[in-house]
Length: 319
Image (cartoon, rainbow, N blue to C red; front, side, top):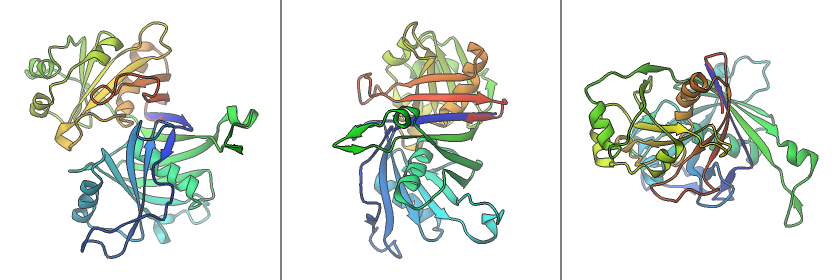
């Protein structure tokens, strides 16, 4: 199943010089080029930050984890350009990069916002001259496509006297299958969410528990007990609810993953690979506008991330 997530001009490059380098005492053989990108926002220190590191060669997992712990953001990703036989087919002009994602404590199989951050960095730094990039990952080959923002194409946007280069990034991700969750742990999960009344509960193939609340308002007002979430089975807990009438959103969501060093992920793109599958069946539609609530650190506001997502063929998700 396939998911597309589109974001237009929702990036803020916290470090404007992509030649910035990081040296971790004696661990680094040579300085590492890096940048921190705030995804799903156009305001500094909002949205979801991801560190993007460009490597000249592969590094071992211990070193990668140490770098991720040093950044201490929800996700640090590592890019290595692929050349030689792995860049096949030879007649393809599409650049390929190996992409890995790490929380401060563990490697993960899929991360949406860090992939968007990596693609944004490559598209805007001059490292690629195409509108399509392929990433080789633990979840297979993923693509990122640069698409012109029609609002800016039709009506140029000016800021400080300069035309702004606005564009969407489309990610083609696999959907995350869901299974019925029938377990004696249901009461413990409800307790970890302060007794929230769940109307449905599913388990994802990534070992997350998907908890559906009656309304999006309940998602916003939820007060999680992180110590108890850490004791619950599975990797993390995705909480979602249908969007309020007139809100313009199909559903709201939050994601808690303290076991992986993430109390609450400001925006979890990979969680939407499961959410799109769930809500497509419940709402009978394939195109969504979703609202990612950030409540542990910020009150709900217009700066909270908005996903525009499409679901197709039961296997892919376009983010």
